[in-house]
Image 1 (cartoon, rainbow, N blue to C red):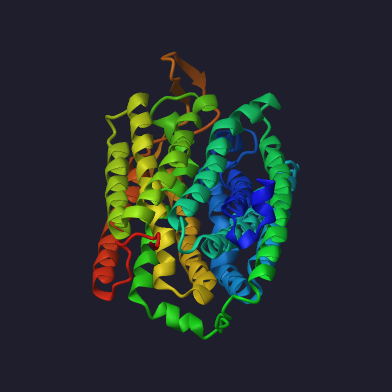
Image 2 (image 1 turned 60 degrees about the horizontal axis):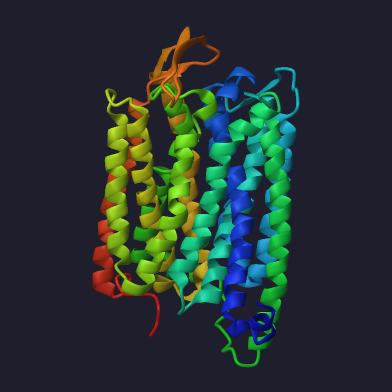
Length: 470
């Protein structure tokens, strides 16, 4: 391996895959924090006095600054102007600051203090935790577009979709670990909400160090290519208008927001769904949802490799959108309450969640020139953040206002078949309406996946063609 790295780093396959491992690990650490609170919803309600609306408010904070302050779009412009090294280090630093604020908020006693925002009364603790999560959201989203551009830079004309699939697989490991181990960490520290967040903060610091190692390798690569590389036309702010004039860009951006809004917000509530509908105990409620990202760890690179070698990217996105509708409609059927069915549906959702991203992100460079790629990814992520901000808040409000069943007692059944009635420390919910909302988003995703495939046939973007250039 050392010998492989000693030759020109720009020509070394070992160096290429090592770079992928370094930046993918940074994203793994980030996605652990993204979903670390999902299995803690019941503890937030029972120990910190949060409601579903508070949890929805906190979860929606992920997109506040990205959407309303346009931080993600500015991040994309910084990426195209300053490059991947500066932008990546900046993004990782922002993530660390955001999580530090979030940890301080959930580990502090504010004495029940609250503030009024636009007529709504919000707990001070909820507000500060949300501000920390919003700052973190800026960092993780900018890191996401930066890593996407890094992969295009190092893998263009090679195993691009496979590399993106592997990076997404690592990110899903972070999500899976958050869903699976967070309840266990919390239990080990006396049902602590703050302990898993502190672990995530430590991981992020390691992820920052990992990215700094990439910076050294990327600097050496650019130095090697300086003499032979053709100078790229610089990004200009007016290039944004060239991007937004493309129908293909809008179809892929809207497909992105619809598809991810039907998956990521679902994962925020999935452990609570397992408890309320399928009778799985609180300590185990994150296990089944964690299988979704674990399933994508193998499948996303597999489908990415298929796209690299066989093509059919637009068709893959359409198939994944159809699958997500079927899964959410089955989750919505009130009579289907067996935990084995929940397991099967989560696995099917994992397949859908592997299909669409494995083809969607490698398709963007086929539509957008590389010097505008950072801004294009930023615009797509910005549009996506409207869904990641609005849908969780909507689901929290729907649960509180239309889906409360009973808070006098709760019947739980764990996956071993043991049944018991326990004194309620939380409200019981009917998740039928939220699942129908997720299914509706999936139906709209089908429409835009079809429109994207039709536009590709008209404009010849090559979404149905292989990525590997022979």
